[in-house]
Length: 433
Image (tube, rainbow, N blue to C red):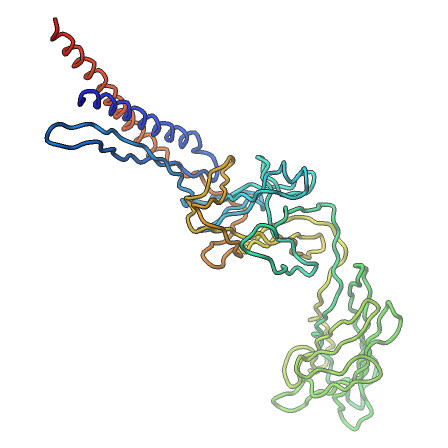
């Protein structure tokens, strides 16, 4: 009966508008929740019958969808491990309760932002108990080859704040100017020396003493020096070379030849380096290329060892942790050294809005969303990771309040249908009287 279908349509109208109001209430309640994705509600009509004999009201149906692909403004913070994803991609996380119980996780979840801080066990965890996941780096800071279609290679990111680290020295660059006047046959022939500190495999400081002795045999200027390198750890000479310099107009002062003496390895003219073996292993020393500026030089009358650099660092404590735009988690030490500990990837799925919504602004891939792929941040379709930042809530409060007014009016109008149907049924009953 048409009048009865009107009553059913009114009931459907009340139910759908109540659903829409619930979504609006949820959005407004989370207007200050970082990373919250708003819920939108759409209505679709139901058609039961259309014919010349009469019309039967079908009513309306409500469908809701969380706009997970929505991206909002990124706001700055003062915590280096506050993370937000710019553009596409999501951070992998796991429930802290799982990690605390087993040291690993069963289910990978995804989120677009989080405020991570180290807990008592060193895990990077949010206040809601989510732990950041990443690939653990090798000792040299490189990331091993991992499967990208599965989460099995991911581990909880754990930082030991009491950890020490020291890197041995493997390379030294010699930026030294030798005085050209010291190779003249009237010069004193006194040696010049410079001491270079390096770090052994245990992070202890040792020294290389490099002594330059000019050749003053004459006649005139020889432009030749003997370079001897002594290691304090071994107490012996580890490098012995004869250095000859150019005195031409175009190449004056540059290296002309490097001849191996009693210790060390032969000079490599392609790289400009020699190798000496100290107690902790080989160290490459960059002397500079032949006939080119840089490295060792012989100009003027001043000894200037001002451009000596080296790698390696002494043993020191961690002073801080940061995540860069490509997801590399770096620990910084008192010595000024930095070390890559993990890489945090960004997960992407084909249908982002098809993921299942979970607590704490997290999402789980489903068959509807399609399988995930773990990208390096900034590669493929993904954006980068922004530290010292959080993503704002997806709620537009002004828009939600406007929708609330419309929903209230629509609800009142559907309630009016009940009153009208009741009056019409009363009139029908009165016919019998």
